[in-house]
Length: 122
Length: 108
Image: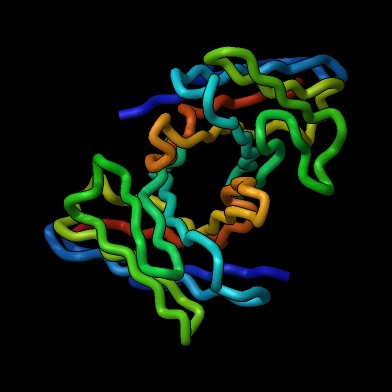
């Protein structure tokens, strides 16, 4: 059974950098895009971006200037860094995956982490 | 940036049919995906590639798409279907991923 688990500080100060890691178990980390999605309390889902196992990235244009994603194949982990955070970045952060199968089919977000709440406050 | 628009809420009686729409300019060229999110839980995929149901998803969930609108239909809605539903699709370039604004489905 595939499992994804987010980890990182639950509280970040304004102007600092939010750092989260997602650990993958139950499947290979290869051949997927690994994604971050967030959800402020009472609001909708927002795609933050994704990183492939080859290191290529795509980011939400509204966050692109502040986001960095990376993957560590040996640890089966991928990471999110969001710089210069404000209260507007307070949200539950989810990690998930996207697959392109051999026939070109696209399968987004079939597995999700449980989510981790990150609050931005001094 | 690209947007997918959904109605904020839909209410149905148990056993009735709920229809949730998702409007986006790229939907004629890109598939729509639908996610169900119950309170306090991570989203779950209920429809992929416009019309397909993952294994384990009840047959009462069906998807369709025509032009710039995709639709999720819950036939014979059950109380346990009460949740927020989000459509999802890439933009026309295939690079940006976008979730719809979300629809709260109430079954009572």
